[in-house]
Length: 80
Image (cartoon, rainbow, N blue to C red):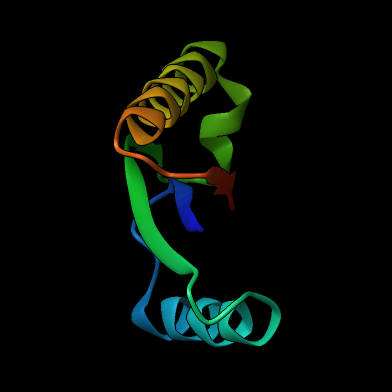
């Protein structure tokens, strides 16, 4: 199973990526893979959530990436 974790904020710090991969390995099959990507444009500050336009751009980017992931053969998309 191929899983895409699409981060809707700025790039995920390396320490967080390592923790996500470690957790993933404990709960998923050995044959499963996890890919972590940040979508663009991503929300960079919590205050961005107060602007409808910023949320719209973020949602559109996530939906576009999800559709692309389906074409690329991913089995699931999750977000942080």
